[in-house]
Structure formats: structure tokens, C-alpha cells
Image (cartoon, rainbow over all chains, first blue to last red; front, side, top):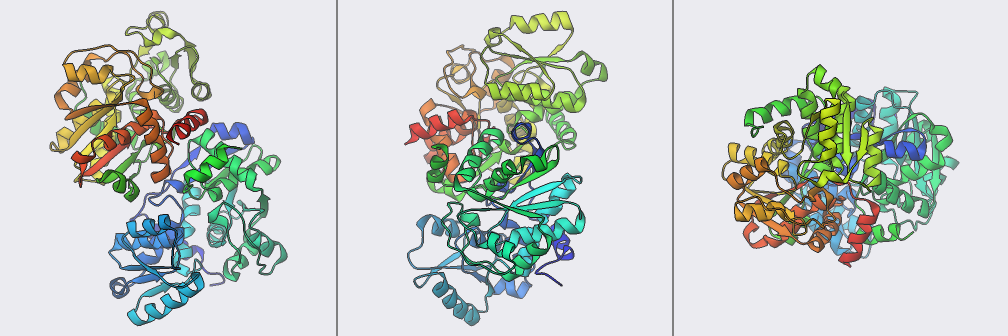
Length: 319
Length: 320
């Protein structure tokens, strides 16, 4: 296998996931057509049980464990959507999940993890310390450790989103996807290009979190500080596995400002009545920058997640 | 017109399956913590039009003859029903005339027109026998359809409860908004027909209390209507849904508009879904019924999400 996943693994995941979640809707919004000049569809990853596309990765990762491993349990160091998706899927399969966080975690996130029935383990000053400690525990207890979002089964699950898009809209022309860690984008590119090679796939990041964009542009891994409010695309470092894929397969990549993203959150609410988190609204912000290029074309915006806090929503509405 | 039977509702599900997927029923631990029940939300806001009325609209259209489609249908609607019929009309190639009140919600009117329906503005839509509609039926030969009295529409709405029973067979209670009463009737017919011990609880705004007062007193009562929640903004209650609700509803709650606004914000915070006023009233009611719902499996029917930015801002402002 050239990359972290391939179309065979993704279609296998697609068959498997059908048992555990419904395909998310792909809705056409005339109100967005009027704004953008394209024939505009939104892929509603915010409609999943955890309000984010990551559920696909978690489900595929847990569904592929051996019965013995399901009995022993899994471990992951993440509070975000990654940890939540593993916790959700583990609960569904009756598998014990340990989620490691640094000491004094954000209470809201800790609560979300506990809500999915996972065991919370707090240790150390930051994620690196928590992760190191978790590694020791996992080795002792025989937990399957999910190190990061580049795990093969996890990434393979993410690409099922593109398979669904092309099933619902076989003549899609452009797909716009938010990029942070790039695991999602890489899996979408592998699926998209394998099924429909002339599909244009365009990435979008925030000007306030440049690592993935610079890494793509310069063809080498570039670190960059992040100050974006859009947690889903807030990364400081990039990973070679995913970057190698988007370097080869992504057709274009645009940057949008924080205020562009905030405005897109409001436009998404206004035109589709869906709450988008920053990452989920970024494709709509990008579509406005790309108006000339997508004019009259069937364009899919991936609304990757809807987990926006009221505080951030108020900031968006105040613009 | 009679009340729809379970058979009508099963048939509607078959017809609808060609045009829409079942909507999700998600469990929200964040709501459990607030209410004390095991709380599920039935996401009618996730349909193509962001509201449950797409179901009844598709069912009506599916059951029209080609001649009836050509002659067309006329209806009065605060928005979602009009949009649903316009959308269904476009799919089935039927003529649709929508009568809206003067000064309608502009984005909803725009959406109705975008689906190729004709819009007529008249404030007589609030009357029990609107003159504007009578005229269109008489002069243009259209069939009048209503979302509170049409058994075909109700049958479409009843598919919501069929899906809920598939998704959560051991549901204890279902809470839904009541405006015209079509949704309430259909959901209750299915719940009581298939799982009679399911508690079915209706909710309306205290600022549009006609259905609540009618149910409480056992006779049709008109009332004033000042609620911002247009999906449940009624002044009068129709005989058919009234009879069904009297027969089947276990309880009926009226909530203040301020409680609805707080529920909109709570829904956003805990489920990250935008609700219109009607879509949030079940949550507002659940907060009032906390003690009774402890530990039970409770489904809140989020009937629609078509709120404007102005309405959202008003709710966020009130909740601060």
C-alpha cells in the first residue's frame, strides 16, 4: 500500500459502517446557490451521533478489532473529536476504552468522554506526558493503543464520507474539505480520485493555523503556531503520512481568515439552518473565495462538524 | 375526512421511502444531565427542508391522480407546510398554490417560490374558512389541503413515530409540539396503536393556547395568538385533531414564549442543533415535567429548524 489507506480498505469500511450508522444526508441548498453561483450541496457530517465526521474513524477502528482485543480494551490520548469517536464506538461494541488527558482537563470535554462510558485517566502536565504514561499502562494491560489520527483503520473509515457523496451525487464536480491534521482530507482524496479521477478536491485551512498549508505548499513538514478558534483545524505540526497523500492528490488549497470563517458560520445558519463549528464552516468561506471557479458547477461543501460552543457562536453573530 | 389508520401510515412509509431517508434519533447525555431522563431527539430538522412537514406533503402528492396533480392543490401555511407542498409539487409535477399572510417570513416565501409554487398573500388565512382559499377552489378547481385536517397529511406525519419505534422500541414517553394538531394526532395514533403504554404528551405555546384550552375543557376554544413560534401559531383548533387528541393524549402542557427561547439556546448548547420555536417546545416541556420523566426513555420531537438569524439572536439575548 502506497499510502496509509487505499480504496479497497475504504470500500470495505463503507460496507462495515452501514451496520452502525446511516449515511449522512447530502442536501442541496438553493439559498447557497444564490450566494455562490454554484449548484451547492452540503454533506452533513454534523448530523452524526457525535456531530462530527470522526465517528467514521472510531467505528471502523473498533469494528476491526479481534474479539480478544475487544475484550482487552483500547486506549487513546485525545479529548477532542478523535477521543470522542473512539469512546462512542467502544461503548457501542461493549469495549473498555481508556482516554488519557493531562491533569486538570477542560471539564466540558472530560464530561463528554465520560458520557460515552469511557474511563478517564489524567496524568502529567501536557499531552506528551499523558501519552507516555498511557503507553506504559496500555502495554501492561494489553490495551490496543491508538496513537494518533493516522491509524490505518481509523483513516480508512474517514474516506467513507466521499463514497457516500459519490453515491448520492455521481456527477459531483468539486468537493471542498477542511484540513487540519489532514487525515480526513487524505482519505477523501484517495476515495475521490479512485472513484472519479476528474473530481476536483480543494482543501481549506485558516490563516491562523498554517502548518498543513505550508507543508503542502513547500513539500516538506513545516511547524507553525496556531491561534484559530476553529479547533477542528487547529494543528501546530503536520504528519508525513497524510501530507504525502494531499501533496499528490489535492487539486488546490486555499486559506481563509478567521473572520471569513465566522461569517461563514452565520451564513450556514442563515441559509441551511445548521450550526457549524469553525472547521465545518471553512469550506463555505473557501467557496466564496473560489466563486469564479465553481460557477455553475456541482459543488459539495463538507460540513465536517457542528460542535460549536455558545461562546463562539455569540462571537460569530457579533460581527 | 376521517382519521388515518395504522394501515394508511404504513402505506405512507412505503411511499416516502422513495423520497427520503429516516431521520436520526440521537441520544444526548448532555440533556440527560439537565432533565434526568434518558433523552433522545428525533431530528426532523435534518430533513431536506428542515422540518417534518415534508413527510405529509410527499404523502399527499404520492396519492394524487395525474388529473388531480394537473388541477393542483391550494393551501394556507405559515411556511414549512407551504415549503413542503411546493417541494413535493415540484418532484411530482403538480400545480401548487400557497396562500400566505401579508408580511410573511421572507426567506420562507422565497423558498416556496423557488420550488415553482404560486404565492398568494391574504390575511384571511387566519380565519377558519379563509375567503382567499374558497375563491381559488371555486374559480380554479384546485383541491384544498390542510396540515391539520387532511388524513393523508397526518398519515405522512405518523411515519415519524414508526421510525421512533424502530429506533427505540422501548421508548417510554414522546413529547411533541401542537399547533394545528396534525402531528400530535398522527404520532399518538401510531404510539397507542403499536405500544399502548407509551406516554404521549403534547405541548403548545401559552401565547397560542387554543389547542391546550380545548383539550383541557373538552370543547373547541378559540384564543389569541401572539407567539413568535410560527409553526404552532394557531388561533383555532379543528374538530378532527381535537377529537383524536382528546381520545389519545396522556397530557398537554403549555409553555411560555420565554421558556421556548431558553429551550432553543439549551438545544443549541447540548445538541448543536438550531431549532425553530416549535422544534424547541418539547424540550421546554420536558424541563417542566422533570420529576415525572426521571429515568425514563424520553423522545423529544424536534419538529423543525427553520429559525432566522434574527430569531436566534433574540433567543440568545433573552437567555443571557
